Amino acid sequence: MFESLQKLQIDPIFALMQQYERDENPQKVNVGIGIYRDIKGKPFVFDCIKKAIGCVRNNNFEYESMGGNQQFLAHTAKLFLGEDFDSEKLSLQQACGGTHACRLFADLYLRNNILGSVKNKPKILLSTPSWGNHFGIFKDFEVVKFSHLDENKAFNFSEYLAQVQAHPNSVLLLHGGRTHNPTGENFTLSQLEILAEKCNENQVFVFVDFAYLGLGKSILEDRKYLQILYKKCVQMAFGVSFSKNASLYKQRLGALFIKTNGVNEKEILESNQQNLIRESLSNLPIYPAEVMNIVFENFYEDWVSELGLVCADIALRRKRLLGPLPARFSYLKNGQGMFGLLGLSQAQVLELREVYSIYMMADSRINFAGVREQDFDYLVHNIKKVL
Ligand code: LMR
Image 1 (cartoon, protein in one colour):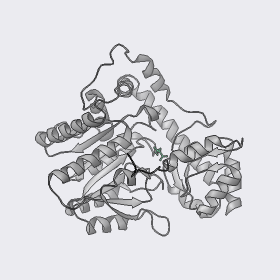
Image 2 (image 1 turned 90 degrees about the vertical axis):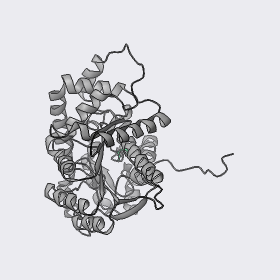
Image 3 (image 1 turned 135 degrees about the vertical axis):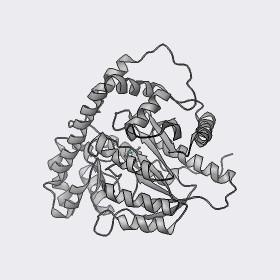
């Protein structure tokens, strides 16, 4: 049995992390996987999360409904959209992290296509580069690729408009907020307004993968991206994650929200999502949702201020590393969030890895939030060396 299967490579982000862990060079630097570590390189857990964990009631681990924890979903919808949304028209579903929110959306969309006997695969417009896993999650779609950056490494807004125009009735995937994985460059708010109109004209469904709320500038600033799309787009959904902005990585906490045209459609979507959950996980892990509820209800201001410090620290590390690098990297100063693409060749990336034990992704994506105090000079010195 299983003769048709072959051994697969593990995901490049996780493969790189393992390679880093095996490296015995004491000067090794991990700027690969997107994790926020403190300046000494230690795993970071928000204080408010530690306090909330201390408050979780541990006397009931029974199952919850397949939709997940409704209190958590209500808090999260408000966190991302503010007060200004119609809860009767928003379909809610807890997910095991942002990846699972994307997966649920893909499965729901595909199920609708199959049940509607649509012959062609649904089309998704996926700009490149993007988070590598998007290509896996949406592999059962017809994937239309186009460039997120232009030849001058600036955000390629006109290409987005052209793709939407050229592919009516498709899905467009966007990264939420001011951040983008891996480039660090994303839409301005006024560009989003124009894009939303273009999507409506062409019946394009907008799906936002929002994994970094609060890590671009602030919760209030970052969520404006979503508020515009939610308000303007006729067809839209968004997946969210609490991995980075609440340090809950392996606890897997996320959610999927879909804008509907009313209670009837909301009920149809929620029942289908719950059915997908029942057939895959049966039930969701509720513990991290309970932790986050305690943060929302008791430590919200603490979380906002800690997140503000983390966000400022990432911006500072970005600036500190880019400052002494040659002018060819100065375009990265416009970027936001954890990531940026250094624009190095594969050979230069490999040289940095093999000779200097500096681990960045093969496309030269660097995680600024992984740079430790002792790494700045070492990185600058050796990046200059391989140019
Ligand atoms: C990353 O892009 O490095 C992070 O989002 C971690 C992951 O799951 O890939």
